Amino acid sequence: MDVFEVINTTRAMRRLKPDPVPDDLVWKVLDGAIRAPSGGNRQPWNFIVVRDEGTKKKIAEWYL
Image 1 (cartoon, rainbow, N blue to C red):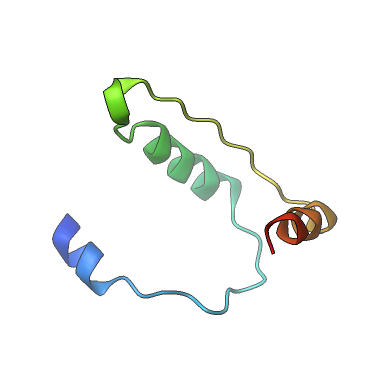
Image 2: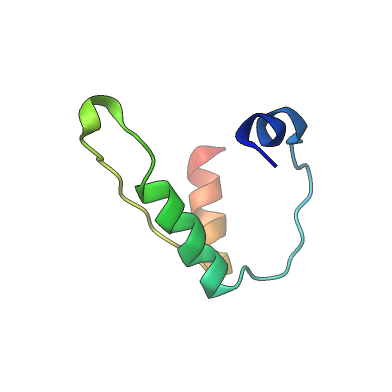
């Protein structure tokens, strides 16, 4: 599968499974994210992985 096929076949997710995301998958996604290009090649990336449901709800309230 090439990148254009991925872009053209990706769908929006309205409901997500409640299953926790395995640590190895989280690290794989973060590894890909930190390698993404940035403006001026500055890589100003900061990531925080939140697993606690109470914390997730508080963050969601801030943005809704």
